[in-house]
Image (cartoon, rainbow, N blue to C red; front, side, top):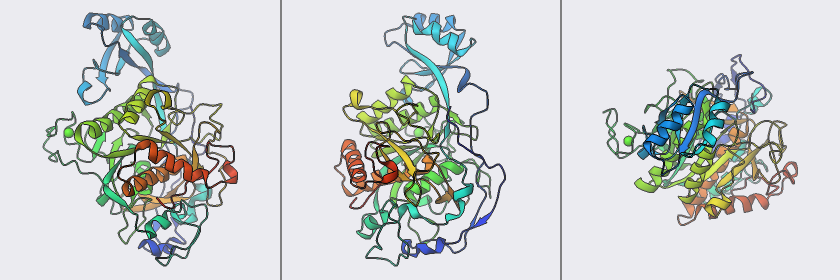
Length: 475
Ligand code: CA
């Protein structure tokens, strides 16, 4: 499994040096104290990279109840929960399900693979977020990822960065997003009360908060801001007051996508957007089955409830190929939902060392590739040693080192990783969708990639399909 490189266990406080340079953004209190960063999730040394005693199994549609029961009996198994979407919750009859097994996972898979009732059986891979330690990059103290090469005509920006995403240029042209564009954040939870996020967090109009009833009938009671697939409850933010570690990664990712422009703190690439939280990572990571369920949740929201979900942000990775995950991404692609994925932090060529989910490709199954795999660059345009790359499996680079964004309980802080690069691209997709409401997912993806191809970047030359970096000029 691919593991974040270094983990800083020792909390430290630093003072931001130059956050006040963001006056253009209407932003940022001076001298914000950056809180300690979260201890990063990482694989447990020596343990297998799948959940022990658990499988993902999908029965054939025409298998009878008796045949399913017989197959499960062969592996001392039982279905724990269906992950095929709201209609399949709890029974596992339609689509994939998580099953407990009394056998070792490889043995159980071998037994089920040839069972006539079984479509596929696979490990429930463990996955982690794609953040790396920020020690060396920590105190850059700027939102360089949204800067542009030239000072925009409107606004008093004092800082430029040719390697920024150029988001400033779109804002200056009045393109700042739309509250009718929705993105899903499949990650840790999000502090939905953070003052920079609250106005851009989805509020489910079909639910009455706290009544314990699934008012909108989507299978999830009180899913006001999304769902916590890790804990199976409606609370997508679980940190205590004053804490900056619990749900830190998800909160940071959300801020890069869509922190509001509100005269304080930070701003995201897309100022107006609605973010829906699918929490599935806990401090120790998560399982791919919960990510599958999250994607199915978003498909239902778009397909059956009219929520205009443009993209899903996936700043996580690990484990091997999952048919259940691939099927979910394909079904999302068919609903016009892009799947933006961090390329991973192993410093490897993913053409050779496959990284999931960034290496899934839906071209054959959906008629276009909905996956956008994102490497990281730093503010000098270099590709950090930890960023994965791949001429055929990574699409573009985006800012991913020294990225300042939101942390729980109103804090701000910097993080590093392809985890931080992916949400710049998700924000860009949202920005493009907002200014061109008729754009298809394939069209949005082409726009993002064409713009990157038009922005050649030395460190990415022949290291990704575009050899370039995120550039949202004109989005
Ligand atoms: Ca509900």
